[in-house]
Length: 272
Image 1 (cartoon, one colour):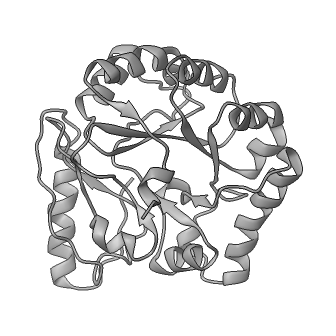
Image 2 (spheres, rainbow, N blue to C red):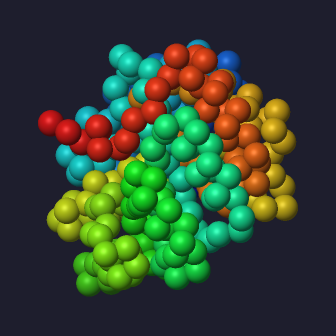
């Protein structure tokens, strides 16, 4: 899943380190501290990547939080409080969003759903329910393209604005300007263009392989990974298409709460 554009030997060496950290970090017990990574050689990367999970320590991003904030971009919150920011990528609807919404409502937890054009067209009632129940709907682009390959501002704007228009027609409200690049693929120019359009971009600090419909994780695997890798300030990415996520969401939220975590909206991250 990780693909990088290598600019020089120094960047290549750093890439090898971070790639090794990423794969080692798949084990819940692996611990890694934040590394001071600069944007100069890394922000040309095309895929968002992480290194290291375990013992409630924040994982290291391929770009530091400080560098990303220059582009109104975030992947993790502060590390002082046990706060979780729940996000879901919604490419299409297959019957699993409703139980996720039921669990969120039961736990009084709000989330952000990053949606594409197809979801808005095919599941309008669920979009309305998200809004009615206090969740945020963000922009995952209209066609779910590899945005790192788009350098033309007019094409970038159209992908974003078509989602905005459809959401407003459907709900009568303006779309919250939160953006998640499809598949985590991005470029520095993408982040700049999103910022110029008034968007905040959100990557993630916790995710797991939950998107393959014919190879869903077991309940035990999901709970082990999502509780074993949780950390203060986590921006959690889950897919609303996952049957496992729909089935374990209530139990997962309960376990996180028992660990002392609370749930907050992404808006808390961007407040001055």
